[in-house]
Image (cartoon, helix red, strand yellow):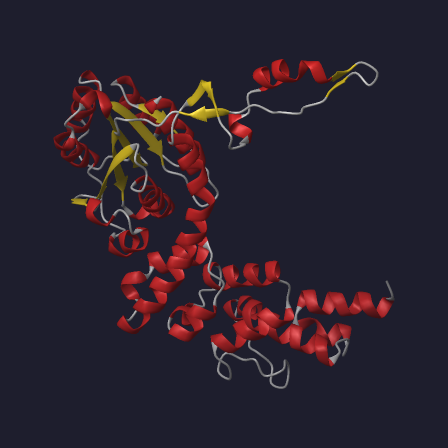
Length: 374
């Protein structure tokens, strides 16, 4: 790498205030890249009280362009992964809220989970003219996550493997290696010491006849944004499966039954009111009233277990449900990095009264449900 190229790279890294030391090291194309970087990361200088210098930069000052212009230019100048990272920085680090004030700008963003979280967190502060754009963006994110998760839930809950019935549909998870070896032993090649598989065998699945009642009880307090997003999507998947009857309940200090809209995760997300306190006991007592077949009912509590009310009512309710042989699953809240964030002391007290506690990703939750339904 030449000295001039090294100087050019350092100039782009350090920003406009390095120019007195580096000189005019940038080409016209580099200036476009520098302008786009400066529009976003130059705000760090501004926060420190360093004023922009007249004549420096290519005119991408916030007073001269819109956020949409910046987004379009950034998408053209940088690889997709870099563009998405800069978009996240604009929303998370530098508070470019003007990005979320214009429907055209919002639709120009790359839909991802970070953007969906930002929209859900500030939905109440967005104008009526933004609602359709918000729905469109969240809808795309929900579709993407659903596409990734649906297979896991359908496969886990569609039925247990039947080892006495063969399937013509190949599936890695249904592969029967014992039967395959037995059926193909005559094709063993002594010279190469290899078994030639002519006809692999697969197990079929038994469809469950009696569905389980699954009550998904979701904490919608302010700390639960990530869990609410995935819970709505999981409910939307479960409601389409014949092996379960899903009830969707959300709560803070109030309890709202959203079962009627469980098939539409986007509507659920646009309905929940993130914020307020937490009364887990009240929500669990409501779920207790929904139980009609205790031995075929699962109550899955998605929460950080930070009970805001006196805990006695919650603990007593959990104990009653456990004694009635309801399966109680406590799903600890996960943050955006899938790290568990919950009240461990309360989780232990719930576990002592019959609730199984785990911090699981949605994919692992699918497997847990399958094990319980058996």
